[in-house]
Image (tube, rainbow, N blue to C red; front, side, top):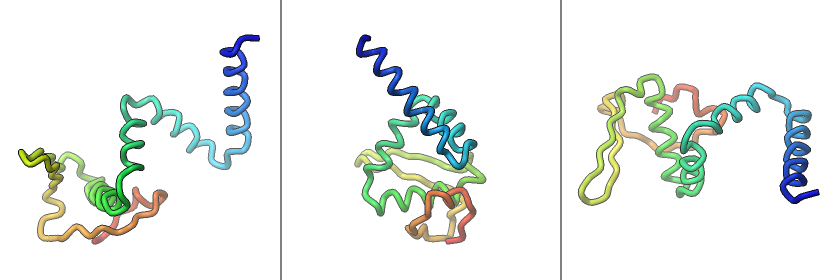
Length: 110
């Protein structure tokens, strides 16, 4: 048996075990779907490696603008800064608050 055949069998075993023990099959299917998106896994890996405060701020910004993503503007400055803006935040300070991953889709008032 070749190494690639063993590897395929090991992967099938892991996938079968994962599917059999998953309490939320819809989430498993969603994970599979999202894993097909180009570059998403790379972006997630970079996001996970961000400092906690940066993750919190980014997650809060995305949660606040979730219902109106078309309002989000991104600007790269000559100093190397990335500026995220949206009129949704006009007159409000973006507070960096921890948002639990399972609640990230819920509307937050900051």
